[in-house]
Image 1 (tube, rainbow, N blue to C red):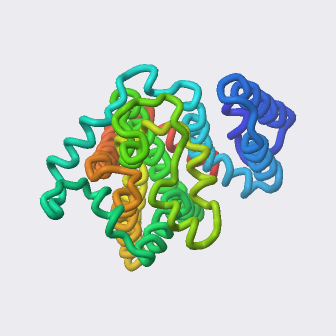
Image 2: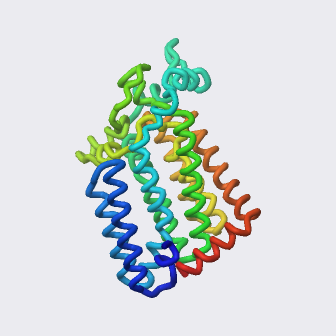
Image 3: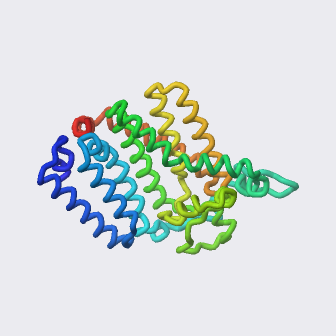
Length: 312
């Protein structure tokens, strides 16, 4: 079935059938697992439009199907909340953060999140909001650049990106963890169906009289998935492949965005420093594991070559 979709630039009756079959299967499975949402029709519409429009758009969307698979898995996590499988860590993670990174203010020990909550500024609210808006657009824009510059590097980056996410998803289920804002609003008592919260990013929305972050976090798959911070992982893999592709001054921008996202994760009370460090470790592990698999597995290398030919 997959071969029928990725087989060359031609549109065939078989490929049309397969694309529509996959689309219907996706909609039915989504309806069963997470309920119907207009986003699902938008995703199918974009995929079909690009697949049938021209040969280059077809290759483009086939390449970016790697990211579509990631998004679908992320969305389907709503159907299987991680707190159903392991105890959610709230107080122990908070206390560990305070013990390692605590800041003593007038005899009171605060976590870095608590410190910035009372010492933030309008300037930092705006700048950190801008940084956090980069966490998906920058990786996707970089992937688009690589698609037109070097298809093999595009595939390497895309698959590394998805692998890092899969590692993070596994940890979410092994170690469900509440974000700092949860402690602020709910204390140490576990409430299973707690909705997402913009936390410190609400100040950005308020400043610009917009609901940018509110709309993003209302669609979150799971509140109790703060460890590791995949927000902190993404800029690491972007910078790694930026350096590999010798992008020069652009890598300085990538590094600034990376540091900005790390700081924002803590400043906005979405992650502890421990979560950020776990995210960085997750990224480094994913990069190392992908390179090891690529080096050791001829089957995987052959798959990469075939995929590259399909989108070239």
